[in-house]
Image 1 (tube, rainbow, N blue to C red):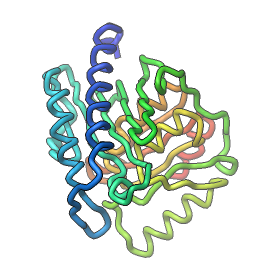
Image 2: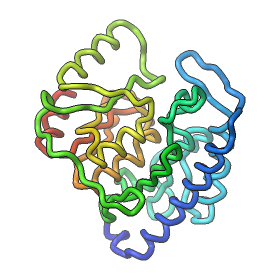
Image 3: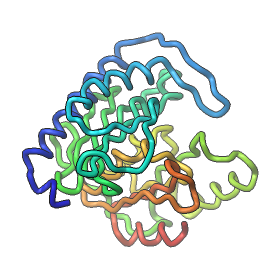
Amino acid sequence: MDWFRETSRLTELAEIGCSAAREVGKLLGARESMSVLELEHDVKSEGDFLADELIKEHLSKTGIPIMSEESKGIGELGGIDGLNWIVDPLDGTVNYTLGMPLSCVSIALWKGDEPVLGVVYDFCRSALYVGGPSMASRCNGELLRVSDITEMKSAVVGTGFPSGRSYVREELDRFAESVARYRKARLLGSAALSMAWVARGWLDCYEERGIYLWDVAAGIPLVLGAGGVSKWMEGSWEFPKGVALAAGRSELFAEMESCI
């Protein structure tokens, strides 16, 4: 991570990411009616694509390649100095179209397969999360700290069942088995927001299988910058799907990882 010892450069990129997230949040918060495309286990709204275009306007100024859920641009993580922006313009689209206040803008910067910076903007609450391994995570300027829970049996986990995962009985049974290891489970419908809540200590940990990288790319550095442990692994999945784990304490993370 030597490239980011140059604090001014990291700060500059963080400011660009935060500015983009705020502008997109304004756009999404102001529009009361948007067209919706119904998919089998998901939806897409006009807001997804409008937000994507606006984010690209901001981030393209950096010259760093952009991988986005809406415009894809998926390949090997490389780009300038190995850098890539990884974006989900509207995470929690189903919640957004239903008027549920659980959606956000997610912008991440990675260097190869290493998370560098995460920006998550919860525009429903005007809560801007920013941070990473070399930048302490904050929400609206307030330092974040993860929880101290060390065992799965005592932990409240954030999780989900992503649209790209199979809905056959075997997969549903595997999901039920995985969440049964925890004290409680919470499905917010937004992976990025769930991981921001791990960074904030509102959730003890996060686990999701078959999740797309762009859904968790910003949350992972936020958890790391708040003192937690987090990782995205391809495992048996095909890129850009994988497994995402996050926990406040290394003991909890190790137990979670042993169950994958």
